Length: 365
Image 1: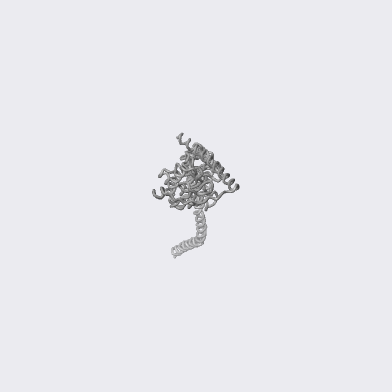
Image 2 (image 1 turned 60 degrees about the vertical axis):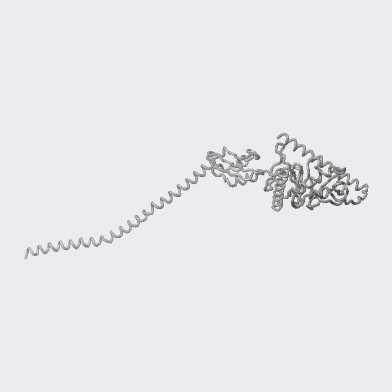
């Protein structure tokens, strides 16, 4: 019994100790769960730290790169030092370079707006297109396509200027330039879209006349073409006939000019040949020869209103003999006629000077 009691006591102690240990463990378990929750929150917060740092670092690097780019682009390393110009014969290279330097003075090569530079260059009279490219680190290359002069225009002020097929007025004709066979007159000098379109039509008509008359060998006898109205083409003759205007109308200009010149050559043999002021071929089949006195004449010198043009050899050899009475002129009308004759002589002298300079230039060539 004593051993059992002892054994029972020992067992009780162990049981109580076990209970105490289990109780302590039970009491400690909640505290462990609380500390674990706080740690997980810290770890979660720390998990976001690398992402935020990466984002901040990327922003800082971007700012530094941008600042470095701005600093490098504006540095003297990219300042324009070389401007290469290609394709110019009429436009001075210095003028092209001046425009480019003015547009890139602040921006430098790297920041230069090439499109704007091209637009500025294309505003120059002789420049049709301009292509600008970078030659890093400090150069620019400019390729110019120039306008091709098609005619020389005599302006209202008496200046002679080149013009291209788009009716763009170019530079003035220089003494060293090849003098054209004949000039263009009648340009609309207003600064408007309508005037520009009209002038383009005039230039196209001029080029057609030039080609047709060159083919027929008639260009040398023409000094100037008046295209104020493209449906009423008028040609001023050259040389000793510079005071004579040939009115050609709206069509068949080559054929009509050839007939008018044949009529003129015939009339030159008459006493009144030096008084011829104009030959009107605008009717096509009929020619009207006007004199300085204000009357008309036939091929044989009889004063009349009109006569048949040289449509055929028979008609040419047998002109009409329709005479009309010539009214006596008063002293006032005589003075008017003399004044008009004087103006015609002055005009003839001016045209002779132009023809003389043209002939001299051709001989030099």
